[in-house]
Length: 240
Image (cartoon, rainbow, N blue to C red; front, side, top):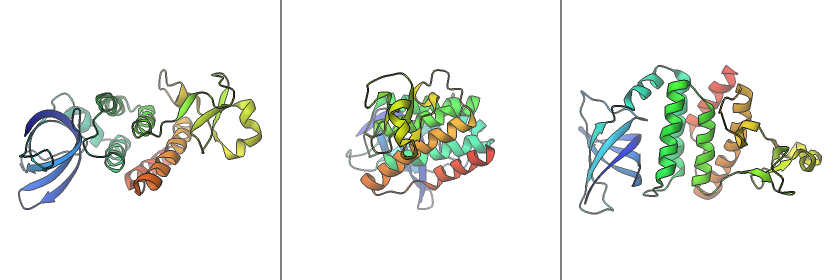
């Protein structure tokens, strides 16, 4: 069985002296792993985008990948490598994808959103796009936050809190008596028009997405939050 696709390289594991087992998130085939013969002249870069040709006898086999670097995307990752905060974002994205997704679960729009978020982070250091990545990941995995209207009144105005039980927003009036048990809702998290966020808004937003990601990983997948995500949060807190 043979196909062509493109994909983000999420992880590599050594396999013998001249090969690795590489895991990609691809546009049309979702999360998939296979063998790649190592070329020392052109080392693989995790987080980078590649054109992929896959050959295997059966779809269930790992198969052999032949890859070619995506020329437009490669400079973005080069820029990320030189910036600790950009690199921390990319590493958190790729490890969260590996930890959260199941094999072969393809959704083209989700894939394109991830490419867009990485591009914006690498080009503009727009960390609001990292928050939106985590929000998109929750939605893709079936744990989306409903921040568009109040869970009690159905109002779209004066939203101020998020329930840690339901992931739904409530207005200031509804949430005020219970505010100690609720998350404050940063405005850009539910109205990301320009995605120009303050450091405090980013940290407050990541408390919310991180809470639901951790609950999803522990309760449903029996995984822990990746260390790369913890490292990113530490860097952002220090920067703040």
